[in-house]
Amino acid sequence: MIINPPQEIDNFFVKDYQKLYNAALDYPEYFWENIAKELYWFKPWRKVLDWQYPYARWFVGAETNIVYNALDRHLKTPTKNKTALIWEGQDGLVRTFTYFELNEAVSRFANALKSLGIRKGDRVAIYLPRVPEQIISMLACAKIGAIHTVIYSGFSIEAVKNRLIDEQAKIVITTNGYYFRDKLINTKNTIDEAVKEVQTVQNIIVVKRLNIETNMVAGRDLWFDEVCHKADNICSTEIMDSNDPLFILYTSGTTGKPKGIIHGHGGYMVGVYITLKWVFNLQPDDIYWCTADPGWITGHSYIVYSPLINGVTSFFYEGPPDFPDPGRWWSLIEKYKITKYYTTPTAIRSLMRYGDEIPNKYDLSSLKILGSVGEPINPEAWLWFYKIIGKEKCPVMDTWWQTETGMHIITPFPSTPLKPGSASKPFPGIIADIVDEKGQSVSPNTQGYLVIKNCWPAMFLDVYNNPQRYKELYWEKIPNVYFTGDSAKIDEEGYFWIIGRNDDVLKVSGYRFGSAELESALVAHPAVAEAAVIGKPDELKGESIKAFVILKIGVTPTDNLKKELREQMRKLIGPIATPDEIEFVNSLPKTRSGKIMRRVLKAQELGQPLGDTSTLES
Ligand code: WT7
Picture 1 (cartoon, helix red, strand yellow):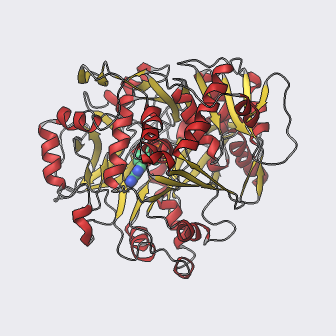
Picture 2: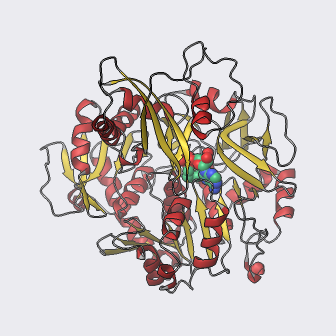
Picture 3: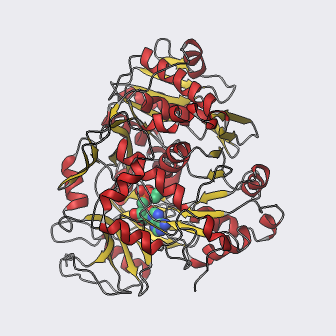
């Protein structure tokens, strides 16, 4: 099935994909350099790309600051008085910021951080829900050259603590609480618990989101508004080397604890800037809404940095799609006349379940382009999104990328003839392929490993504190190419069809978990001897979590114990990690060397062929 592009093709930045792709393929450095020249640099580069396996460094020798391009630059143009951000709370509270006002808020907080001793290269953790201070904090850190780590506000004590320890954060920014649906989430208590074992944290800065009693530790805890109030509203933007780190964002991998993905100022800025502009065909009068959370990479790239660099007006909403009723998000599209709307397959599928009558009650005619990200979108959900939300006039951009890639890698453009369920083709300048385990390209319609065979500017700089893992996990599986961890197919017309992860990473409602991370939370329970976790196909969430648990000798398997284990996962990692199924078993399939074969477990569970079992312990 092909969905043809709308009529307005002449107004699109990308009119002829193939021509652009070929040109970028011939001269990739020239292609990226020309885009980089649209942005501001304190000092130009000596070299566009320096690739020394396994590290790529972009715009070598150049100096810039992503915040200079996101804010300062606009203050000399009419964008200064344009609305940068419209925020609405779940409770209906509205706050707006022009570019000028946002810059002022960022400058104040940047000065406050400085007065607390934060310097270039220091790490600052941001543990906030979707409130303007989340964005302000990120920009304030970047402005003074500090490295931000945003920790998703749905994470619990253990997950927060591990991240704070790994990055050795000096300051944590949190809120005194917020409502998620009708539940009060006390983030401040979580932080108080989490920092108990973290020596490096000197201050906790608290955003007063609610008028509730808050435990403030004298000398350590400070109110966000108070520190800003005392600070000056002018702050110069630190000059950064193009490859200086901008942020660390933790993400789950096959083994061990989540790893800190590092992105830098220069290359990342160029990549995120152009991808959103072209894929969503950004226009000066757009009201853009990305429903993600800046706790994840989508929020970093496409809520905070790219929209601001592009000078658009963004809408930012605090709450979930279906609270207090399943029309909430649609009502916001109507209210703010959203033109570009970027969301997730899980959100689409969950709203689709309520039927067409709900979205049909709202005027969604302002919409022009729709987007999807985070997990494969099934054709049924794609078509519903296209027909019921977009009224068959808005192209659906199914964008494939990762925390590590920083920017869109495989994506359509509004001018692309679309195939529902396919993320279309690689962005110009990127060579993606499907290969077998030896690195040989496979024939069309054959499943294989999705790899990237060249460099792109927003690629991550390293794994924080762990260059060994960086090399092993991404660059050695198949020598010299970037290993994405996904399986996919390419059809005879060159369209990519993403199948899912080929490692022990789960995608539950778009959230990324490593099996090992979930298992270690289970094994931390005194009744558990061993555990293995797999992802099972789920109609709504993409994948659901199933845990197989071997209990210690003498422990009785009960439903109550299952409940306790669920609670344990919620407490240690977060509610998003609650297993859907727990099964008590007496043994687990293992290799002779004792490694759990989750692949075999999954095949057994789904009634599929077991594949190669030669290493299976008999
Ligand atoms: C993994 C990366 C991309 C930002 C949010 C997630 C899956 C992502 C798609 C898509 C099919 C997708 C992949 C990828 N994924 N986008 N459009 N179609 N799968 O970032 O948490 O780093 O996860 O998400 O499996 O490897 P992330």
